[in-house]
Image 1: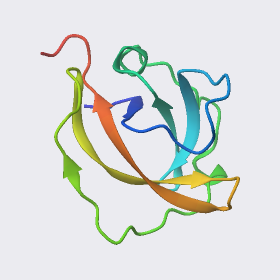
Image 2: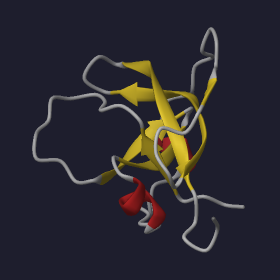
Image 3: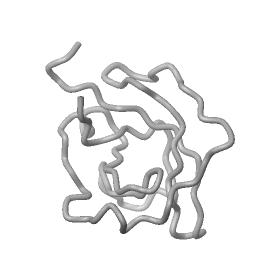
Image 4: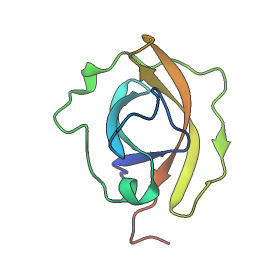
Length: 105
């Protein structure tokens, strides 16, 4: 099952400035669309279209990658990932979940 978007289970990177619900980030060394709501993530909007896989800095190995229970209905496979934060020039550990496609319970 290919999942186009990930759901953020925490706000990341910058203060709440008028930012879209989904945006393109470097996740574990590859461009991935991250969204702040299940509905937006399930819509499958690809904010990284046209970005080459090599456009992200290499991912980092996190000390411990944990799995988590889904915080909301419509989310699954919640886990730690490394997201590149250009404001500090480094990766941050962030909790994300996959959005469950609308045709699946």
